[in-house]
Length: 154
Image 1 (spheres, rainbow, N blue to C red):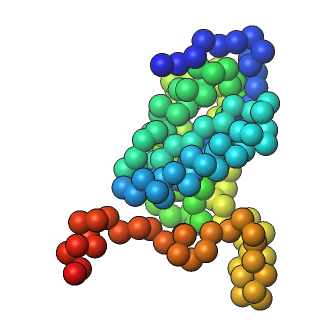
Image 2: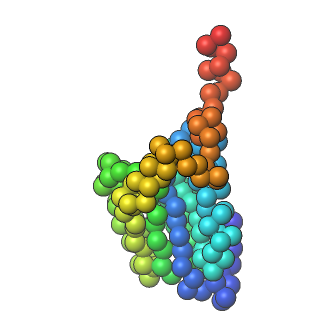
């Protein structure tokens, strides 16, 4: 249920972090956790997350929640590494539809995350053995198999 807009929230910037989405609840939870961390770090922003497909929250609903919470401008952070089909076609179409639904709200998108030159440093740091203390181990980052899949391998 949407919250009533509070005058103190009016005009706050909105951030929508969007990834592809997956059927893995654990993988989807990572995006929700990232949004929560940013929300804690930037309490003056209205922060949400969405999955382009396969999981909730979806893009349209997440945009509507940001607008209902008072965002008058929204930056859509593309949590993708490259400019694949969804970055080139699907998400721009979703943004165009959101602009039509919310004509008074400015909605813009970032380039994909992989375009950021800092990605190179992350790769170099990992190759040189410098570990980000907050980075997941390979075991933590690997999707967990469902019990059905595990039992079928036995």
